[in-house]
Length: 104
Image 1 (cartoon, rainbow, N blue to C red):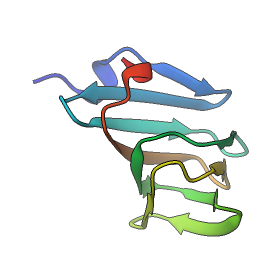
Image 2 (image 1 turned 180 degrees about the horizontal axis):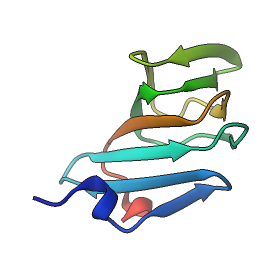
Image 3 (image 1 turned 90 degrees about the vertical axis):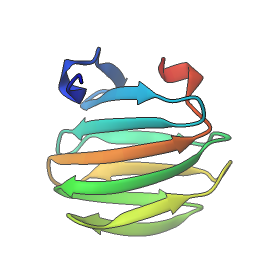
């Protein structure tokens, strides 16, 4: 079985690197985020679960701030606007349903 870090990296934004694998109906990824990096506001049809492995991440979901740190997660419903900024270097797991065709 391959390691996530052996997969081709995808640059999501400056300072954000994702490593993704895909099933028929979902996408699973490890994302590394450098402190101070941000993911601009966006939305997508996919439901998303973000789980914090390391670091601190502030997410803005539907206009509300959510402070996340190691061991915490957030479920982002389909088509809800969200963004994020890393307070510390972070490693997060992102799971999307349906699969992210744009990440393949």
